[in-house]
Image (cartoon, rainbow over the protein chains, first blue to last red):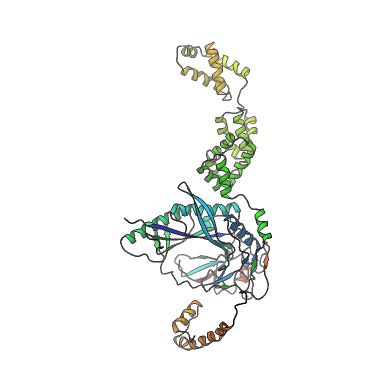
Length: 472
Length: 97
Ligand SMILES: [Zn+2]
């Protein structure tokens, strides 16, 4: 059987979370807005209006470019991409054609235990289209222009991806980068991060006929759709049939791709330079300004976590949850010792996750560090720490919970000795059993002392004291 | 270059969303062809020493700060020119989905 190699290229559209739209001063946040309430003559394409570039969107693009280790274009301009559709009021989309703001770059992703470099061809700024609604059973569609003009960055990968899992990793890495840069709200269900996947298979050095999977917004579905397509295309080729160059969609319910032909139109966008927007000159000063406020990137965070011995799965989780990572960083600063810092990771990837899934968390790094130190010093047992953790996640200070509830572990020998003696006096049978060689009698006595102290005794110390008395 | 073929003209009309009748297609082919010919004279100019530009205004770096300015016009006023609306949406002929 011939071995077919898949080749995958990805285009990602990231909606930017700037305050205003790409080319007008309308509010860019329409999450709770009524339809067509964040619109103006510019984003409705009234004749005679002029677009003006949003400087914050340009800075977001530079940030992303730096994170992708890419060349930032010193001369960049906008172009018109011409086509007719009701979600596009001007009859063209302002995009960037031959002078994108971000040039070639790359990301590094871990695929099946090996680091792979995946190239980025380019990234450019453009404006989003309006939202179309198609009421069931009606012969019309409805248009809400609130989204029209939202700044987008399109990131185009090189065809460097050769497996569905690598594609998923690439998508996640770009998503994590965009999130850590804070340039998008990243709400995938609401289209903040969408992608088109180009996939072909071939058993020669030449690329096969490519199929485009359009408009996906879930990492898992991207991986599934690609696996399905690779199998479908391979099967066709093995049967001696040919692949149609076409656009296909992903049907989640049926777990298969389906042809979207019929919608297909020959693409002839007739790009030309946008005459209403003067070109941009990106200076060293602008780039340096952006560089000065760059946050830590996923790969830097990964390196740091790696260096303190945190395993890859836990690294992934912390990178996927920027707030959890912040808690970790703050706790690690307070804890200093590697053994204690690892305990912070254990809490955050373990007990913390189900609590976080239940609702918003008020856990701070300072409180987590405090809890870990209380256990380390022997002031409370590990069990008490687990018992009070939910309250700590709700924002309470571990020290004050311990003080308020009297949970401090009894480690004072004098006080404990009295209780131990008392328990022994009340349980002569257990003493006899122990002396007769029944080891479990000791466990019973430890339990009695723990009960008498309402769980606050240090179990190790109780054990030691009991053995001393019993063997005396 | 001579006149535009009928197919070329029909394609341009489709892209520009113009509905041309058979008669118009026949008639305009020659006219559009001669406009193109006229513009083609520019190709004869030696521009080898001239830097390419897409702008003649001389402006660069025109941008604005990212501050929301609410539009003074109401939704009703802004949508007034739409042929049809429904519940604040603009109503259009159904498009495939
Ligand atoms: Zn606007």
